[in-house]
Image 1 (cartoon, rainbow, N blue to C red):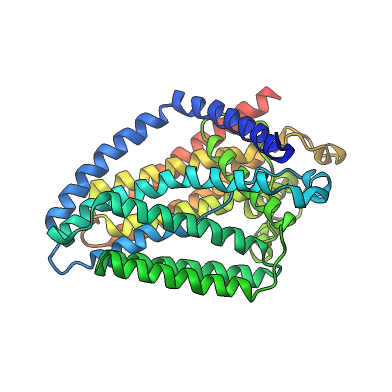
Image 2 (cartoon, rainbow, N blue to C red):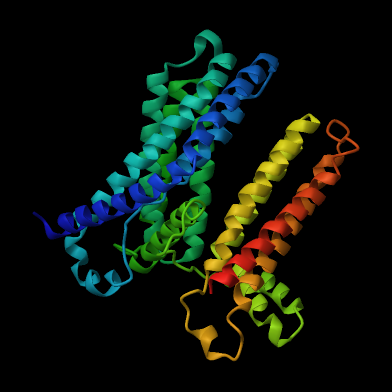
Length: 403
């Protein structure tokens, strides 16, 4: 067997075992039951919403916005490791089978997401198009073709030398996906196919005129580390992930917030964890959760539904921020300074609490809309803050006792 192909199979098998193990723990926590209940509830609300949609509803625009992220976000899981930059780089000419396997694996896994997105949009599409709606199978095949084209575009994007070119190419792919999907759902299969071919030709011409590397090893390794960190952070909701990597981002402007802490010995660990939160993937996850929560809270109507969504996102954020205390636990650097190690869990808990209180205050702003507000609703962030304080305090004390 080709050594590159064998290497890919071995790494894919190890990756599959890792995902299967942590997925088992996620299932034990009741996560899949939660997904099933969320699916039932969202399906019911989806059906009720379709009954109220007016005839002039811009369903093609909504469907294009819904499907574009599933098409455009096309990471290629290469499963590369840090040592590959040394040991595999000299074998670049013989690594074709390895990267073809990575492309196929990415297509298969992301293809399921594309099929789900098309399936979820079918009721809205049929409601808006009526008898003129295209067959479900045709839409699925079109979506899979578009997804594969985006994966090829993602590989091309990774080969660009300059980061600015990669960003421009990525933005163009997003725009092209929206135009192709809008043409498909608004004007039919022929218009969508013409837009698809035109976009593919334009992006291909852009690629030919750009400066590229055959394989951009450092960039692919960086992206693979990012995908792995995101996956392990997700599983960290359910179980303590031992091999969770630490990915640091500069975020120089945000990092200045940590300088607001007084310069004292007892603030050393608090300063460390404040910088850790601001410069790690946890901050990105919390930011995305907060933005998603704001969008939903601005859209929902009804006091109790608002309260349920608000509480749900506070709980999800609390679980995510619980991972903060596990950073730096194996680092030797804090042990070199005359700072009591027992301060570490409490400092991490206080930083996580401050972040969660800031989120609770921000998410409380939409509650003052007339169609949502109730006299008891302002007590919700107070209750959420008190609960977060109680859980963080108990977590900090229990972690301290374990030491």
